[in-house]
Length: 330
Image (cartoon, rainbow, N blue to C red; front, side, top):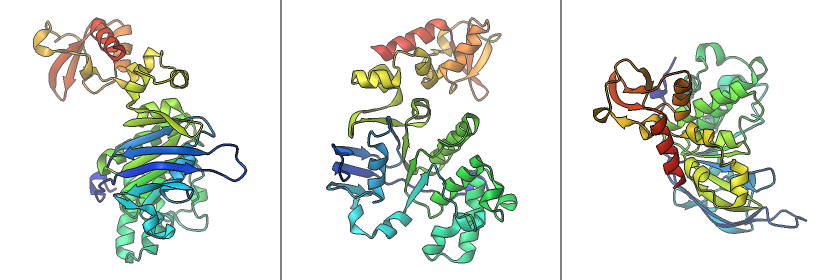
C-alpha cells in the first residue's frame, strides 16, 4: 500500500477574507456581517459556533457556492472572482457531511473524477487514485473497484477526503465532514485528517459545532456568533483567555481537563539535569498530553520519566503540572 510519503506534496495557499457580507432573501439580519479573516498558508483553521452563526456560509464563499453581496475573498493572492466558479472549485478541495459519492461509479472513478475533468491522462489518474486510497488507509487493491454502497459510513468519508485531495488542491474546505459517523470512527477520521495535513501542508478550513473536535484538531479556532467573529486564537488561548462571556460559556473555559488535553508533557516537565534520578519511574513520551500524564500519576506514580525516542529528557510530577496550568491563566 502506498505510504503517506508517496503522496505528492501540496503547499498550502493563503486565504484572505475581507469585509464579507452575505444576506439571504427575507432574512432579518446578515448571515455573515462584515467578516475579515486571514488564513496563513498551511494553517488548519476551525470555524466554530452553533447552528445559524454563519460559519458554513462563510466557508462556502471561498469556493463561491455562496456569493457575498460585498467584500473580497482571495486564494493565494488572487480574487476568487477572477476565474469561473467551475475552474475555482476544481482547484479547491471540498468535503461535506453527506459525502455525495456517485453511487453508480466505482471508488476509483469517484476519486479520479476531478483529475479526469482536468484532462489528466489515465495512467496518471490511476496512480493518483491508488496513492490517495493509501493515504486515507483504504487498500487500493481491495477498494478501487467497489461501489459506495459496499462501504461503511466511515469508509465513505475517507473516500470523500481522498476525492477532495485528488487534484492536489492547496486549500481544503471541510463542512461538518464527520458529523454523521459514530464517536470512535469520528476520532479516527480526525486523526487521519491531522496526519494528512501535517504531511501535505494543505491549508484547511474546517466547520464544526463540536467544541471538543475543534480543540482536538485546530491550529486556530475562529468562534462565530450571529454572523460575526467574536474570537480567533489558538485552542489553549481560547480556553485560558476567552474574549467574551459567550466564548466562556461555549468553550466551558473553566474545565481544566480540557486544557490538560491540549498541553504537552514537554511544556510542564523539569529538565533531566535538574531532577533526581528517574531510572525507576514510569515513562511517558514528551509529546504525550498532560491528560495522559495525569492518568499515570493518579494510578500511583509520584514522578514520571519523560522520554524522547530512547533518551530521557526530563521528569514530570503533580507540581510541574500545576505550574503549567497556572501559567495558562496568567
